[in-house]
Each structure stands twice: as structure tokens, then as C-alpha cells.
Amino acid sequence: MSVVENLQIVLEEIEQAKNNRTTSKKNEPVILIAVTKNHGVEMMREAIDGGVKDIGENRVQEAAEKFKTLDREVTRHLIGHLQTNKAKQAVRLFDLIHSVDSEHLAEAIDKAAGSVGKIQDVLIQVNLAKEDSKSGVYEENLQSLIEKIDALKNIRLRGLMLIAPNYSDVENCRPLFRRMREIFDDINKTRNGFDFLSMGMSHDYKIAVEEGANVVRVGTAIFGARNYF
Ligand SMILES: *Cc1c(COP(=O)(O)O)cnc(C)c1O
Image (cartoon, rainbow, N blue to C red; front, side, top):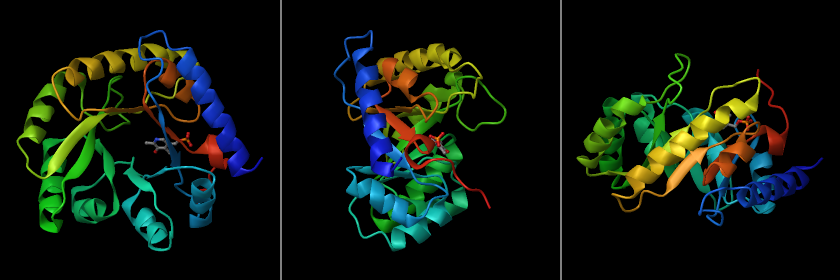
């Protein structure tokens, strides 16, 4: 199967999942981020030429090298963990940073954005299942991080991001996605520009969309398995 054929299937699955939504948000659009980590820039081009408007990378250095030769207009997402010493490079490269999970990192991004004259859009990554292996803020610390971010001038909070646990039965993710949407809606009521709920990857994006994701991050289902060197 080609990238474009895979893309078509994923887009159809997303539409179907939207129809299965039980909420009043059935028609809320879903942004598909094509995750190109560990794939070459030619895969990026293929996806963009196939209609993709959003590209996701998880490492700053890898993204920098690929974006240098990418001769296409596209919205760029940093979906992986960000170290504070890469903040400056990240704000130059990315339109949306999905992985803010500490005051320390938010401050580094704010400072970096200020130094290049940019307002950086970010999401807060939430570790809803409290997995040791994952980054993200715990639910009980979310409000305080939001307040800290609101006090910073060069950083704008646009929503939340979740990486669900890798359960062998993917249905086990459903209550987490549902809870995340509730948290998102509660915050959304009190703010403007808080629009994005980024959750769902190749193995769980259908359930994520059914439960209210409006941004999904899909790699393998579009590009096939990654090679790690
Ligand atoms: C790699 C990655 C994805 C995409 O994963 P697939 O299973 O290949 O779809 C999504 N989100 C994050 C944070 C990732 O690192």
C-alpha cells in the first residue's frame, strides 16, 4: 500500500469514528498529524502532496535536518519530549509544541520565544494514567501549571495532549480518552483559544476520535513500521 492509499484509509476511519461519537460534538473537525519520525523527508513530501497539512516530529535535531530540505508549506508539530536546552531551536522550528509538562520547560520556551520575537503555541501533556515511563503533568497539578503559563507573555496555551498507555486491549484506553475530553471541556468553558485536544495514535486513534479527540498523531498506519538504527 502506498502512503496516499494508507492516508485515504485513515481519513475514512476518522470520518467513521466521528459518526460514532456519542456527544453533541459529532461534527467537530479532526486534524490529522502525519508523524514522520524515523522516516526520510521524501515521505514527508509524499504525505503533503497527498493532502496532509500537519506534520509531527518527536526530536528537535531530526526535525531540523528534515525541515531544512522540505520545500513545502505545512504546519509543524513537536510531539515528543522537549529538553529545556533545545527550547530555542524548537521555537524556531515548530508551530505547536505538544509536550509542555513543567513550569521549568514553559519558562524556557517563553524565554526562547521572546528572544526570537514569537508567541509560541503550546499544549500541556497530561499523564492521566500516572505511568512512570511517560512524561506529562498529573491531573491534580494541571490547574497550577495553567496559571503559571498564563503569567508568561510569549507562550500561548492552546489545549491538551495525552499519550494513552499501551494496553494490549485498546478498549481500555476509552475511559481515559473520555475523561480527558471532560477535563478539556471544563477548561475550554473558561478560556478563549483553547481549541486542541491531541490524543490518539495508530493503534488507538479511532477510539480517541469517538471520545472527542480533535487532533490525532498517526505514524505507522500511514508510513508503515519505522526502522530504528
Ligand atoms: C511516534 C508517536 C506517535 C505516532 O505513533 P504511531 O503508533 O506510529 O502512530 C504519536 N504520538 C507521539 C507522541 C509519538 O511519539
